[in-house]
Image 1 (cartoon, rainbow, N blue to C red):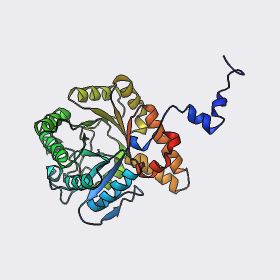
Image 2 (image 1 turned 90 degrees about the horizontal axis):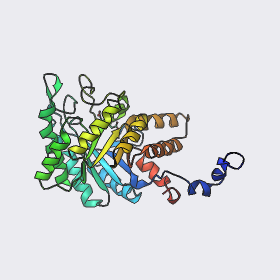
Image 3 (image 1 turned 120 degrees about the horizontal axis):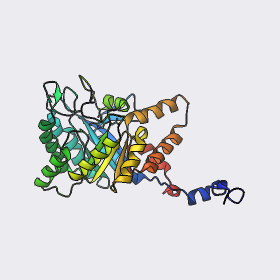
Image 4 (image 1 turned 180 degrees about the horizontal axis):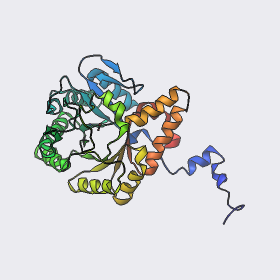
Length: 327
Ligand code: PBG
């Protein structure tokens, strides 16, 4: 049946019709908010390239967590700014490090939000790479036990989910075994399986002070030109025990999200990264586009591509806009 019997505009004519046939939902519980935690008290150091975001001390992070709970946001993921950096990234797996401290405080005061631990060494190493460096190269196998130690440290401090973002081979299996051996068999692993070597991480590296001091991350993160390889990464991480997988960044890789979702019937997380956030904010500040509208459209697109969960710097400002009509 075609025009004039069929008129696609009929179901677009009124908001009630549009709501009736809307295929994709976006709710605060689909969102995870990243926070950057640092030492000190009542510290709030704004991050220039990420308007509205700051490096915050643990007390401030607790307040933020309570606010996110009140907005219905599903989770938060912590990144730490350590007191000192060294070649082995020691503060990443120190039980008194900034992230374990923050987990303990937030768990005690805002227990109704899922706490995600990003597991990586780059914020903690003086060279800024995601693993230990040997002969100018990131040494995969020597990095695995350190990542496993970090994951156990976070689970012990109250993290509900551990999410390795380092892109070492075999890290999911190493972390799974370490968690199981330490009595955390019920702690899920969300693997950053398809993490691309991306220019979109620029603002994050300012926020987390984690830019590599030599070279780049192309030796371990994925080539933006590849997507078959993303499916292999996902398959391997699932075999090693990942409970859910991640694609990162999100908007330039919507096709990868879709392929992963179609191929594997597992929960898919997408990371709407710092550069994706900064671009919208910058254009909105210049009055070149409507920031809220573009943020909502971007997040909806990521969900439509197949992501169940989105890690996004928009979580706090967008959650209040997601009224009952959209759920
Ligand atoms: C690594 C990590 C990075 C991000 C999350 N985890 C940075 C990197 O690989 O350089 C980037 C997130 C973002 O850009 O928002 N620990």
